[in-house]
Length: 322
Length: 290
Image: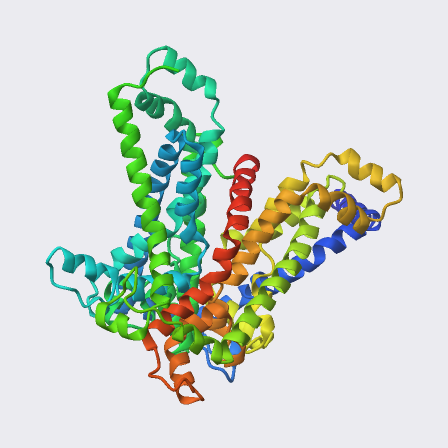
């Protein structure tokens, strides 16, 4: 009894001490905390306030009762996962994102290595600036370029090229199959140049002496790239991949929606979870199932971030993000 | 310098060829867009898109600039980009600075607070409900600014840069009786120009290019930013045709779309030399510091 009592007082003393420390810290550094306050409160509104809204995922939401709508357990999840949309949108999302990741990495690392070999400064700059260009334009512009300039049914570049080789022009706006790959290609085209600059920065950071020593030992340039450059670039590659893996179940909504829009004929190969969610909110006002889908994306994303980081950490501690 | 072997020269030729082709692929659509926007409607209909059009015409641009929509859209985009970028830099810069100082005891807990939403967010629907039900952002200009104001990533980027500023500089400013804000504006910011320029470009570009916020929240025509106007071009054309198109010509539907595309691209092309310089620098900073 007595022991318990004394430990209680110790605890309250401790918390009193902590409180004291807190007040002392505030008294000493209040201007700095005040500087953090605006960012912290805006983040609170747009990132923390939505968290309780996740409750909608378990409710049959209506606008009269709002968050006091009746609970329906896991029905919303059932609704999504048993619909034809679940399989299609999940498949398309993963298909597009995995291809994004793989091809973008392959292209940008290759371009970085090639750019590093270019010795003429002016040419290097011209290539870089040209390859960089598409990165700076909005998803809408990219979307319009793709649909109106390249893959327009009547006048587009694609059909001009097809006709040049004697083929039959394609009515792109009604042919679903190629669009998954068109979206993937568009993304590579937009970001490969930009990412290659990041990798190029990584390459520039490698000690030049390593290459010189290898050259003295008679290693060809190709061998130097394989045995020195690539292994030393690996941490950068892994970091870039880890950064994008959490978004595996999110779509590149901006690009995809600006390319496809509401053209239902193409959904079979282009509808991703985010475009489905957008339509469910804006057009169908289907709130319960939509929140469920959002929760599914976030939880899977969270698991992917920590899971992949854990695996990388097991392989080599230095490569992990945290 | 050693003489290059035949194989090496062939490899170099191949590298130049590949890079040149890819550089061409990256720029050609933009060049073509520009040329088509200068064609007459008739030559597009007769010959499709041509790099050198049969007949030049400025009718598409005339049609665009005759209608007031474009001025509103430019106004909205410029306002959102300037106000958004300045506010965002100020708010995130201050937070990043305070979090970079060792004397601030709870900085790690606060970093955690900024980090959590980066790995777990509530999804689109709860966010949309906060914006519409709680803040009533629909059809306000703030809808285009507020949701993008705070970026944890940029805060961390700036914090990491501020950490490299010698603590002694800040302490001596303190001893001289320089206030916290004055130290920040007059000592810290001038020493951090590269990171400020880079983040300003990232944020400015994000605001200028954003259209999804308008897609979620804006129905009022006069509040459309440039990008969203381009996205809604078909309905825009419908609107202009019905309400006071006074060209006295056939409405140049094809070239009008393409010209609007170029009008939206224009400012970025003009600023490109500046943009790319700071971007390359910024990426280097990020790659070294990150």
